[in-house]
Image 1 (cartoon, rainbow, N blue to C red):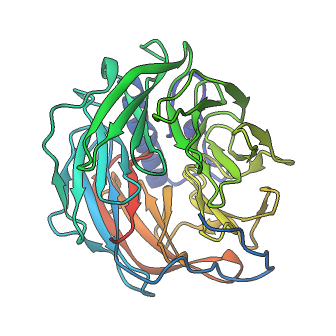
Image 2 (image 1 turned 135 degrees about the vertical axis):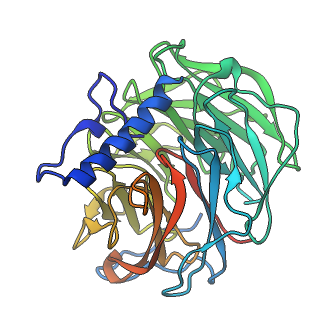
Length: 412
């Protein structure tokens, strides 16, 4: 969520070594795209080994990665497999129309539906059915709107997929951030439940995630530098905020570990990763040593299924940080980390794991043939968690793929 607001976000910090003119252009482009948008608006833990590759979660199958962009009116669909050296392939019919300013792209837990919210014009939740081959078909519904036409930064789901939570509001030209709850029908269509929950007058630019037991919603409040906890009732409706925990500067991409025991978020402005233990009641306790250093503008958290390794792309450091996760949730940098973001990688902003747990994909927001478009890079996760680029890069063709604007959907 790179930005250039007056608060001095990390997207404005130059590289210490001095970027090339081409990279400066790309950096400025990525930051400008996010600024435009802002103004508009479980597996058990494995035994820890010193040098091993992650355990596979399932056999190789075709999965689908969808990449949107704040400056595109489309979603690119890409098929990927766990086959070594296999190049990503375009999903038949891609790109798919999505409306302008789609800063958030999310998938239902069962992978059958995709959701996005255009933030230029009407803030409407758009629903797509995901076919087995990855093709998207727009589900025709009565308009499902975000209250107040508020800029939406995140969509998250309860573990059973029956409830969806939209985090909206920038805190600049509105009354602060809100969380709106939707029930999700079997056909994927959401319907609003109750009134939005206000997170606070100065809150904004928020994302969220739901605890593994479905009892708590965690909201990263970028503007306030806090993680806000709300309890979820049996009907899925959140309470008023119960807890506000200080984290670093510019928190985003809240993530629960696969074993459900730890909570992580990157601090985009601060350049680090915060780690918390999740207590029995859902409250958060900082892990000793937190926050843990990352690079410039860390952007998303990806954890291997065995809970052993974490990867964090650094947009303006032009690399990917790798960590070993300790039993208490603490992070130790891997040997060789940070890793290059690809043969022509420039600004990695999102990473995803193939369901086999052996391959990592990075969405680079500024390395396409046209510097404005995003590329997808493929890496093999080797012994000790090391990353090695293992397939040709794929140009998605979408522009401004910043923020939570991409998602992976495992094959059905």
